[in-house]
Image (cartoon, rainbow, N blue to C red; front, side, top):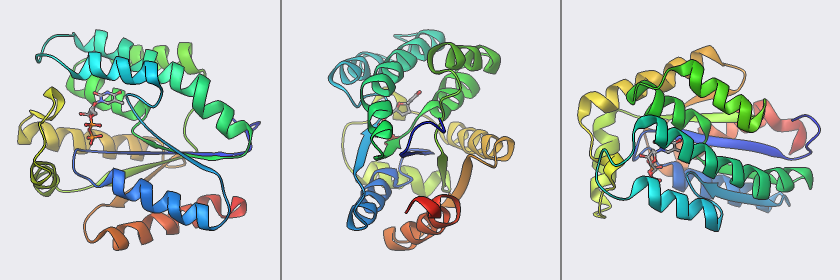
Length: 213
Ligand code: TYD
């Protein structure tokens, strides 16, 4: 990844952690400093990957096995990385992604029961050692996260129809990932106003990628 000039940041966390807002705020900030910024979401981010998103998130719960979900997520991820993310990084752009590989580890691995080693092997097969420069783990009490989701008053997809115990376990899984990979991951409290949260994110960007700003 060191051959690429740009920076790649992913944003992870439970539903309602404010990832989308934070990505927009960081993108604006970086653009005012003169950087090219690309924002993408997963699964999705290219027309084909968005079709795969409709396929994997749509329909009844249980339509896909966790392993099938993993394969669809990595198919979408592969085309997104190959056609959008890597070319952007090669020309020096900053890429901000709403979710990336850690979502597969948490949702299909921890929650779905796909063995972590199998997910690691698939990651290596598809992406080699390609990973974000920084992964922001947006940490929030599951209750207030879900309140934000419900206040958006939109149809919940099958992935959002989950109980409190699930959100507690997903949160713990993200914190475990952060503990295992402290160089890549930064846990940021998603509690507070969007400006407060974005100030926390900016501190991490300055500390870890300040030389590229
Ligand atoms: P989305 O509506 O984008 O949710 P959010 O606002 O939480 O990002 O839905 C994406 C859903 O897909 C989310 O519930 C997590 C799930 N997902 C996986 O299960 N595995 C993955 O690898 C990815 C990228 C997402």
